[in-house]
Image (cartoon, rainbow, N blue to C red):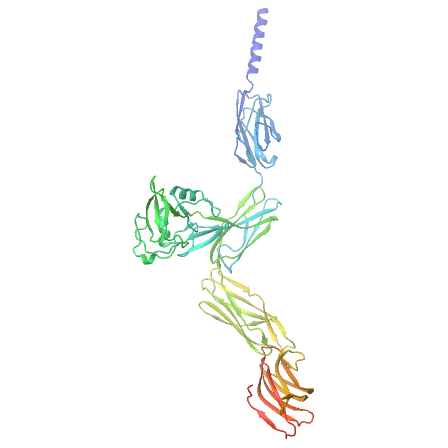
Length: 592
């Protein structure tokens, strides 16, 4: 019996010892193990050694800037009851805040010293990116008139956070035509060759060895881009022959030692004048030589790399040019940017919308600029009751402007006008008779116009700026109100040319712009008297009858027909002679 008890004890000890030795001995975190970007529900996975299926696993998250081991500044338990044999647990990451410095720790629940943590940090981002914006204007692939465009989109998000929007010009290395276009990208000047669809730095760099020229392009950040390289010989020769240098006389383009056949066609310069006769570095030919292209005749050959030549850098990937930013836009609101000083031609743009954590980039939109000009002509100042003609000239390209009409808005009244369509412009004209005014008066006028846009298949409407037209009162008086002296009469003793005081009586009939003024004036005891007109722009044709005398002198009568009354003062002398008979005379077509 004793032996049986000893045997049973031994079996119990062995069974107990086997149970203890079966505990988890190691754990390895599989995911997340660093670099992941998690949103929503993701599986935390691990492997474990000596898991019998009876042991549980504890999963903990931690976050900290500058990890060193497991020392989180903030942490939390995800679960303590998942079986070690499962090797996976679905974790809803929305239960924690967004962040970029998360790690996971997986440990044995029964023995916290058996654990593993993520090798590197991972990101949790449960902020839903902003929606794709709604394009409001300009309509995609439309034509915009003038030299500016209002970019307008509606931005929305899944919450009520404020949004920030950045507008970018999408500058491609392509353009229409056979010349080149110049762009200012992030403050840097970029030349785009329309013939070859390449972008070039605008001026040559200093004379350098090949290795420095090559690294100068590869290391260059210009226009916000770092995709610059040295051009290969064919690209350089394309530029010289048919591109920005405008030389079309080359033979054998793409072949070494090819050149031009007609030197007289190869004048001119490429970008700048000082480098037109230089050799320019191209790509590597061999370990000791690089290709070079001569821009005076487009000849290309090779040169030892230790030689010194100019160079320009080229790229064709394009640029992102930040044109403007709008911040703190309310959800479901407009984001607007006024893009000004645009050249004629096609322009591409897109917007980047961020809610502070996530960013959405819009599609690339396109519109074309057609900057027409208008000229509005009218005379100012003008005289009341005068006839005045108003004209509006709008430059026209039949691709963008078909027929058109206009309305003259003068002093609050709309007047239909005559319209004529020419090949290169639209011509509108209207003649009005100025109203009578009681005093000098300013009138406001403008034109509204519209024309058919065949490119957009729509009718475009616009208006000019406001203009001011001054209408002068037609006036004539004794200089008590008006100050521009037109006529000055003096009394003189004929025998000695002495000035004497006397009486003068005047009756005028004055005509200007179809308006007749009758004016009378008598003065006594004066040596002279003057008459003034209301404006220097005014002129009259006058008929005058005047009588003048002085004490002890006879009375004389003076007639003047078609007397010119202008802003140039006429001095008229009345001579008196004592003891003579009255003499009456008439002056016809008087010129003074």
